[in-house]
Image: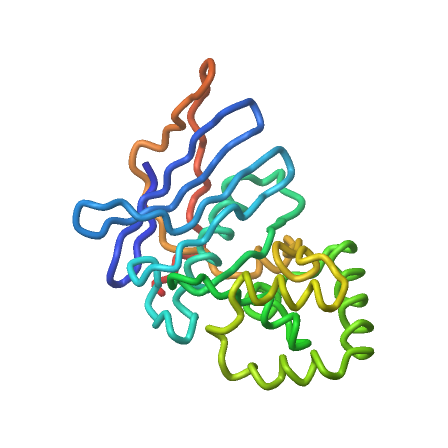
Length: 231
């Protein structure tokens, strides 16, 4: 099984094959006896889908969670390794439902979009909104322009990110007459060229096998590491 190594930690890379061209790649670490899922990716033919990103300090590569840079480095490492492992990939897609890891799960990108700011993945990973998301954002901008009262309320809360809970965001969307899906679970793509421009993480190969599900599967021939780095 491949291992992703940094200066301070080692992460396990597990690849599960479900069908001929359908794979799931999980990057995990441990906290005591608990296994933590840092990043989960799905590969379906030419499509790479970012399924989830764990916001744990153990998954933060080399930097702090407060600044977010360690989380950015982790997801970049995962996407870059996946792109090298599956050379037929043509696109990277994700649904952005990022939230702060607290009891009320305040929404990160929804807050940003309501304030006219770029989404989290847009700012940190160069993600591009899909046509559906672009249309929703244009509608949001026009609607807010016609509701200065709501826009002023949102600006007043700009410095209180914990206030943008799912309940509050949904209520704002109802008042604006738009679906909550206009800002929650928005869809984005990351250009493959952007992913390939990131540096390759240091990966050590140990028994690079794929666990076959539903009727067999074979081993993945992991690519040689051309430019290993240490975060």
